[in-house]
Image 1 (spheres, rainbow, N blue to C red):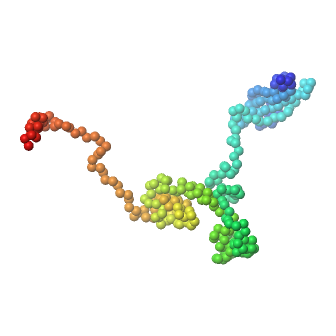
Image 2: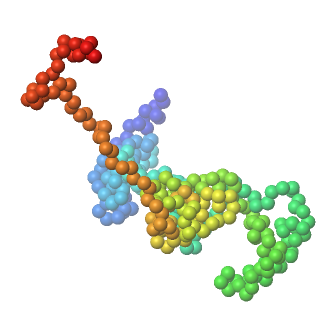
Image 3: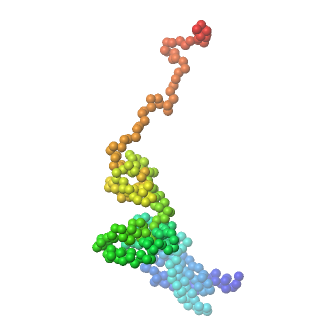
Length: 308
């Protein structure tokens, strides 16, 4: 171990005694009344010492004002180096930063918020698949691009509420949008599965509401059918008094607002058992003594059997 390293571990005497200088520097940098008592010092190197003071500011429990002082070689004047607020061993720290994409939860978005999706989002896949070059008459081909853009320009001059006209039925733009070809990306199989799992958990057969329902949604008149593959297992509820109004519900879901709840027969209730098999009944092997009857003796019984 070198001599320089040994000297750096021993605080310089003049710098260690400059507590008042360090406190004045901390009080100048901090708000009034938040610099507490001196809690110690540490040697940062040759003639460089850091003094620590308790931070009394609310919200900074365990933090310390660190004031570093130093002096030049062969100089007796101690000067200020820097003043910072540092966390101590037991300081209250903010949690580790998490990207917004991992912090976002359902319901967090508000009016005006934008939620960009990654280019490799597993929930989406390209809306068009096939050969590298689509057919010339395809709605997404380059040959039809000008026609589609011109057609869209006629109906997209303003917001949907102020559009002068709607796309003519049977036009390239209308057919492309109806068939899903007007979208750059569509739901992937993975996206469909996780959406179905999410809806099944909220409005599925295993929910307490469905367990107590008189019948399932598949026979309810308030169920609105949806298209696509999800329509085989889900529909939209249109009963304003149902807890699932406006939501996609599983066909096996149900609630008390079923359209035929008044005529749905109640499940049959089993009759009360005639014999209670859960108890043990006492059955005497011999008549009671006070009944007046005298049990037959083994000899009499044997004689009667032989006689017969």
